[in-house]
Image (tube, rainbow, N blue to C red; front, side):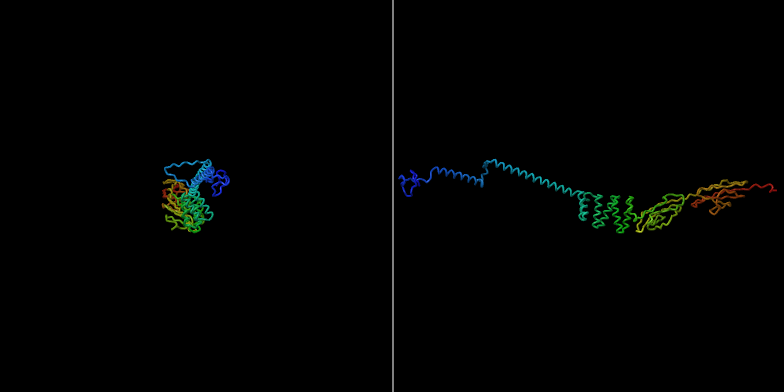
Length: 394
């Protein structure tokens, strides 16, 4: 403690100041200023401490008590603005990413479900010798564009790579039905049938083909259909019918309308057709046992009977010798007799005007054409007696 009067340090136990002798009064060892300073510092520190505690653990207010807004500094406002902007940008980026992802997904899905995409993949797989994958893609392409000509051809090629010949043939036949002028499909089928020596199938394939370019694919395998050198129809003379085909084929024919494949005779030369109606059928065959298409034609032969010949002189009595001529049609020959008998090809052949015979005679004349058709007999009665000489009578 200190002396209140002189401020000297007081010794413990003394009641008087050893310096000034003043009576000692016990007072606190601090002054009011010190208390104020001390209290002020402690209050400031306590306030700071309390503020820190409020920030770390804010007191929960009653539900019905309004929260008093705390003052926000400019720095805090700037920071909050940046945070909000960052959040907004992040949200926009997320939305854009989602839109882009959906767009890519839709685009890829649309692309994968397009005919062109699947067709191109099938070509690529085939090129890289992956026929299983190629077949899967080309089937998808055909699901999108059924009966596409190029896709069907590609599928046939892929099936060939997979050695699925039965399915390949079915696909190629389907192509020829849809596209009758698809030369490549026909060529592939011909190659398969030749390899398998299945000439009956090749013959069946060739039936009904009219395109000349495609028909050339069967040259050497399918015989040419025989051709009649004379057109079927009506004739007034006997005809010699000639048939032709390719040099390596044999022609079989019938003249009674029966099947030439089963009952045909070998054609070795011209066929003579008789008078009447004749149905001729013919077919060609080759070393492979393949038959051409059957050709048929109906020939009607009605031979024309020559007209009855006419003599230049009428019947009658003649006293003067006359020459007789006979009118003969082209392609015919006349024959005659003087005894009234019916002439034939062995009788006297007419070659020019001839003299009538003396006496009462009957001239009989016929005409025979190149078909051996004989005309009706023309008969003329001539009575010819030359006049008697008077001197001879005496």
